[in-house]
Length: 214
Image (cartoon, rainbow, N blue to C red; front, side):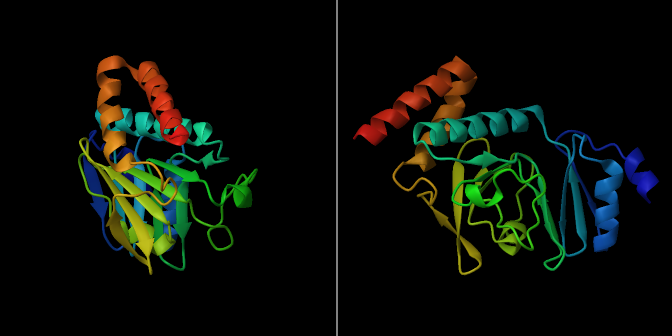
């Protein structure tokens, strides 16, 4: 079976789903395919998903991640981005690879750690998913207890915050409660496609400074 997965070609923007996959099979697949792969692998209750992103997916992921990093720097908040690190919990039979993720409130708790173990370490404070060709399963992140999940569909930003184990949609980010990011992030993503990445990040930093000064 692992040989078949190695031979599998998943076209950009496409998904491959495999049912009735045991936890040990999932672990074996992660090890066999390795970390240097283009595909994302998610697992939930026996369902394995392999997805290869489109170039536009990667563009949006990078610019939103850069905007978050610029925001954290301007606010002088220590944070750690772990990009598409695999987060998994055998007890919850769930494993996810976000497009990007950040430790913000809990940065100090995982500072310097080379391995994150969700049985003892907290999950990321913020996860980002680009949902252009598919919709992220909220239940995967609910199971891992990720406090805040952003989903961007190429046009709008959806902010989900965890309440009593379930996500509710919100116009306010818990990590950045004083900034109207729900409206602003999509504007700067679009601006980056016209003016370029560097000009956009510079303009965004100026906007953050104006907001904090006010």
